[in-house]
Length: 293
Length: 342
Image 1 (cartoon, rainbow over the protein chains, first blue to last red):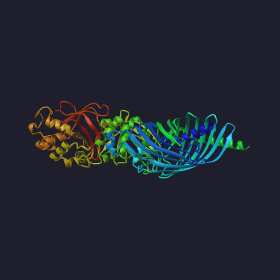
Image 2: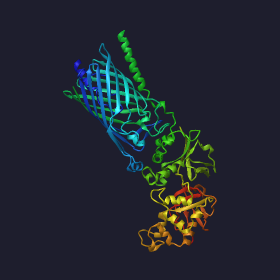
Image 3: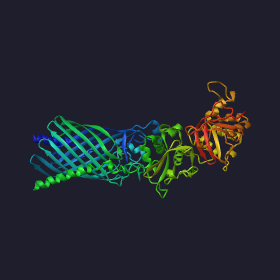
């Protein structure tokens, strides 16, 4: 039972990463030689934008933006205490600007392509048994860098850019508690150094969940606080270059996973921003298929 | 003891997470005033202005402090969507305008520094970033800038002040003739306009007169459609216009008319008082003497415009584009050719 639980939890914590929302690094470790691969799909939409000082109705130029992404996500245990995490999304971002507006501005309603590849290494440096469970302390470091040739410097066209063209180096500290009854909690906090004028950011996430042999569910709250060197959209210092904007958010979501057959399982999730600055108030679903080995 | 240490560590980690997750609330910046550009984007009455500012390439300018003024501020007279709609303009139709003209038009609504309503006085003027000054008019207690009624005042922005107006202000930066030529050449609307009027001015030899920099004209400028109706009549009826079967629908049709007639009709479109240009709020119902000698009759000042009727017109003409400021007068584009006693 304990072993099953560990395997299950290990397999599914590599759930698909919703865009910008959820830490790619979980609080669980793969055992040596074990891994998982997840193919996922997510779809988000927004027609309101968190600007300063208020949320506004209607995305400038594009009215409404729909983002669809397909991700390949993998985790592998080099050892019981050292895992690698890989993620690569392909993203399509579509606006709803009128044909006349597109014609006037020379814009297009679609931007798509391979976005940023990310690779994280995570190391469990301490773990201890508690009377009814286990606590793990994990340090993780990773890099995310553009792989596709998408652009982020097209002025207001880049409202629907698929990324910032920033290379990020992030460090994360993670604490994970798992009770023997299946309930777990993971807290993580990290800092991300970013290029291409993108403000560095403090990242944090708190996740509560339940993992049993036939079912997994979690709910999380994720937060990004950008360095105040960033500018506000349409605020002082804004020059039409969106990567330089100060993007903060608080996002909540949940994920569910069900093993289907042998090492294969399916997952689904939902996420929504509850607060933000300089980004669209998106919400959407994600679906994934995971193969664990 | 070791466990206590670990539990404390966990508690701290979770506390840190909770604290940071709770930081992103609007309370951190809800008191910050929005920039002028952000006000336009946030306000549903300024949808067209928002699109115009983007197309006219002033959105970034109006997001930032004014580097051209020590105060760092701008004052913007912001036309509502209804103001743009008077000219047939909305987000999807802004493309009928040439982009440089649109940009200049927007800059005509902007000035350096904070001009608050308390310092707006009848007869006062305010310069614009475009160059030409705007005039303030008090008509029966209502304040106007040029021909535009000031609907709301002193909206405070992080980078200045916004006042709301009910009409788009237009300044050509050129004299009456050059203004008509700019329309004729497609430099304002992408489709040429006032082409018959320009042909008429040339045919009548009035170019020099209407270019007089010392004058301060008030001119009614009939659209091409107005001339076509006069010369060609009802498109559904053959040869019922002034030119009969000679009508081709081209501006050169004007040259088929006697010079004296064209001169007389054109002179009937200019106020006799050539020293005091009139914006719409400065006009009153009743007869007004023209340069030609006879009177035109102005209708009531309603919704910011007046009708104007010539002696031989069956119905009054409406203003299509009122209050175009030129360097030597004000042009009101109208939808009929005004006809004196013929």
